[in-house]
Image (cartoon, rainbow, N blue to C red; front, side, top):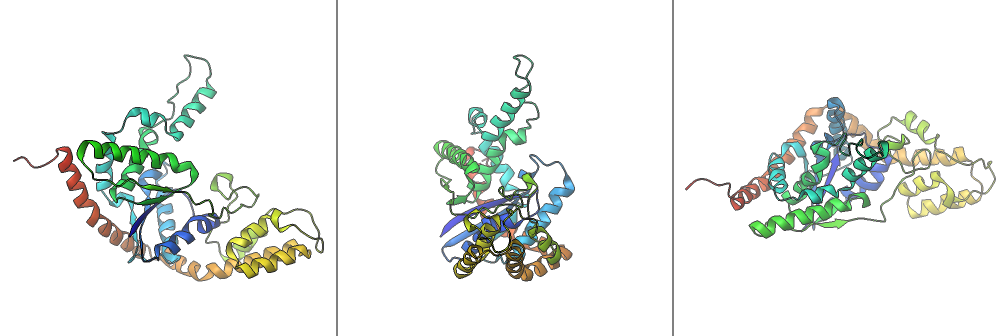
Length: 338
């Protein structure tokens, strides 16, 4: 069995890009017999940059409901809330005591904040390089290492911007092993270059940072309205259109079968009207999401069901985490007096 661990930060509302690029392929992979999947809601990580309690709580609810509505089998996969596993912050402290400050100084997020501060005040002596830097921001790679090492993950799927954190997790785990014995596996970074990256309404990568997303659970009428806003060129109906230079076609490919893609490609070459192309895109997405949308709305109206699933996941996860932490504390000398 290969243990695959994925964390989802609880600060946003799921959109089509999240669904196509991460959620859908992850749930599909979790159903394989040789995969032991861990999915967790990273609510401790959310606190690093988000100090809006209602937003964190609502995002946690929405994201949990999303994964459940889309068919995650919680009997086969581990699905838990990070904050429900007290062993994780305990392990974070053990690892913090083995982590050099120099390593944290090299973390991309910290360096970016320092660079921004120095750019605002370039004159020597006036700039405060650590302005706005909390210890959460500075040391969160250690928390991420604890998330991964706690369950001895074999593989951790991440975006290219997160690869440094996996390298840090290996460095931290290896140093702990060197001092206290072999307790942790060295996780493998999985960056899938084939993951679909959907364009947003304006053609840039679909991201809440650009305010160009199509929320995943919009009602039918609002979903259609959003899709009709996708940026296109000024070519008229009947004029041939290049499918390789169309945001509508890019999104269509992420949902269609190979034969449907070929049919749409031909329609583009024959000059399909943009309104008709968008209508077909809407119908395809709406058909795929209509059933899960009903399930999602049901879950959002019955949060006790979501909570029950997360508690069940936490109990399963702690069955592994509790004995491992006991061994680690024993290894570092935190043990009963004899």
